[in-house]
Amino acid sequence: MGTPFQLLKTDTATQARRGRLQTRHGVVETPIFMPVGTQGTVKSITPAHLHEIGAQIILGNTYHLNLRPGSELIRDLGGLHRFMGWDGPILTDSGGFQVFSLAKLRDIRDDGVAFQSHLDGAKLFLGPREVMRIQQNLGSDIAMVLDECPPWPCERDACARAVARSQRWALQCKQIATESGFLAAGHHVFAIAQGSTFDDLRREAAEALSALDFPGYAVGGVSVGEPEPEMLKQVAATTPFLPANKPRYTMGLGTPPQMLKMIALGVDMFDCVLPTRVARNGLAFTPDGPMNLRNEKYRTDPRPIVEGLANYTSGFSRAYLRHVTLAGEIISCTLLTLHNLHFYLDLMAQARAHLESGDYGSWHRSWIERYEAGAAARVAG
Image (cartoon, rainbow, N blue to C red; front, side):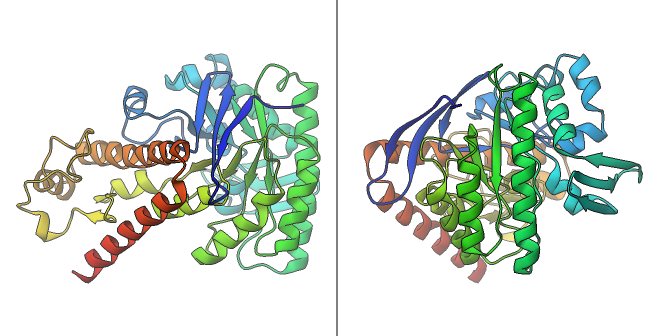
């Protein structure tokens, strides 16, 4: 079974790829960043905003949406697309990461995870069948398999057990999606390669999952506390062993330089709460590093956040944005979220353009150099 993913171009100087993924709700041009809409909303902005800033695909979360308001309710109201008013593609995480990070108590078993809700302590269970049923109720364009995400650091034996269990769950998820007609109806299911910091386990997971011929693959268990060089090493240990003709997704990260570095390692898709989360605290991304608008030096600054970048904040001064941030005005969250998401999406558009023109390697290195130099200067100043 294949997926309608076209590999349009591979960079000659790096492993970067330019691709195109067809989903039930439209085409996704890769590399791409996916804004996170955990609870069925990208915080503080509307679906119309998302379209205007160039979002192609967004995320929802199985764990949170099943707890509240419930996947059956969403199904009965027409699915997640209609429920939240977004007509583009949606990828949903399986909820496994949230179980491991949020649940009050959890018991990992071979058939799934028994846990207590972080909201009210209710006893719940997620296994491959439950995860696929919930995502089918949501109508996800891309559904993620259930996996066990090892902590960092972790012992090799514990990691090997998590990798083996994740592979069994992945196979079960695919079988369930096949038997239910989910895959035949054009929905995609992505497997997740774990392995923590152990290169041989990463390779083993990638090769075993590749043999199962999923529509797409994710690199899981990165950005869970390890230093950035270790994180990049884990990605580099995984992507060469994933199918070249399938999309590759690194879950839950990162900063703009991290994304460009991972594109160079052959990753096609990213998501992260960072641009929306820091926006609510007055932090804005720029080509010269992050800008903390709470700083006194911006109190009388008449310039926009980024001169020459046309978006929702270009008509507002840094002084105004600082004022509404410090005053706790809701518009500050909306404007800075729009700016940060547009910055991320525009960066991916630049990456695609440079892949097409053939100079991604040199462009991404110079972009990162400017960003990191500017960030260091802001810290020093």
